[in-house]
Image (cartoon, rainbow, N blue to C red; front, side, top):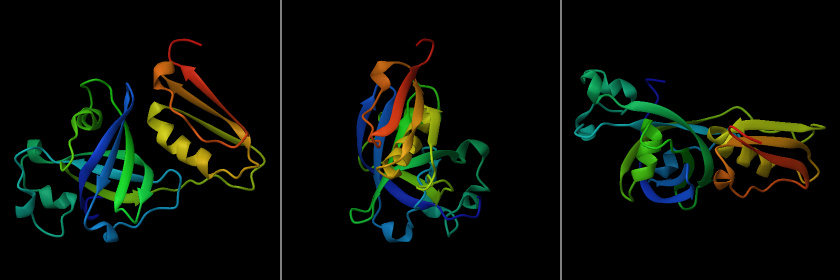
Length: 193
């Protein structure tokens, strides 16, 4: 991972999807170097560079190794995020990020992200796409898995059969999902139902 190139993106816009999830759309003028993944669990690794780090002065090509000589508090924190959407024509990448109040690096960043704010990422990666020939599908996860589940549901063929179980804090954290008619989506509320 350390030697993988960090690609420069910036926040294009954000949208509060639920009280605990923010959609962040990232754009880049160098999007042609980003090769979108065809997997429904496609992910990128966001590198949160601390304030005050002169990224332009770091060794090139820019990788996590470029930060090796900096003190620990100046090294980026890396978090893995599922890609919700890629718009190659617009040069944009969308990630939905769970916000746990002020806790956590990615959620706090997403809650306060502003257009033009820089972010660095590695990727994409991924390995899973639903088998369209499968007799039955089961998808399950909490809100952190919701972007991957949503993308997988959209990739299922119209004749797919199955169930999806998604655990969230409460009804306020449900989002509209597109699924084939015979795939039942069940929202499970944490601590109840």
